[in-house]
Length: 239
Image (cartoon, rainbow, N blue to C red; front, side):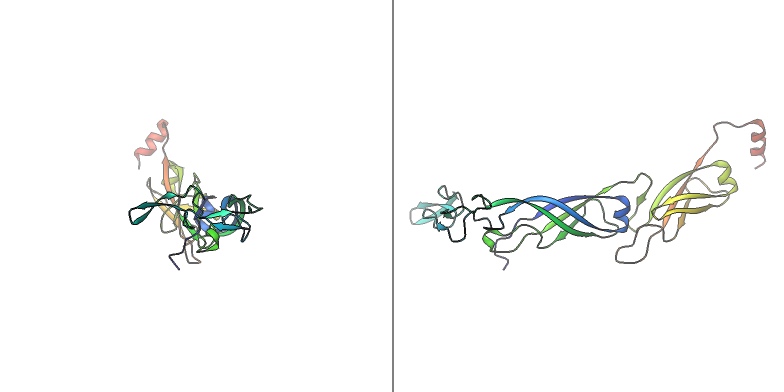
């Protein structure tokens, strides 16, 4: 019944490393919340040990008489908006109706999740008041620790940059590069230009809802010498 009151929604921030954000991860998270007391469901009284407030007739609202009309005028001062008068306080919450609770929850973060993404866990939030209505939701807000070596695009491709001496880009060379999957050998063709992009298949992030991976794309920067010998100058003239 959608008209019934609903328990509170809770939001919990979870920070994960860049690699876990690319591959997806299962995690156990722990956090503390203030929720309606599990014993009295927020009422604050031992079960059956309360009376309906005579001032507001259980509405929790101050009733103002305006001629033949009755209108609500804010919280009832007699019961402080609860609609009841407690005869015996709940032992667990001492009549407050709320308690601090430690929660431990298993969560699944999918691959290629973005910074600030919210994962909704329906029915894992707060209890409804007096046990009447729906339990709220738990929202997991994903925060990602950046990795200075890598960036990622929407297609699950990973990008990194390496700087190669001018001699090696002119003649071509093989270099070891870091990827999310470990070290890989990258062949740089002779006469590669600055900004050249070289890709290795299946060494990127996991593609969502798939067993496949994107590419690892390396961008080539060229390290130019700060000075040349006379012999090097003559060699350059022959190019």
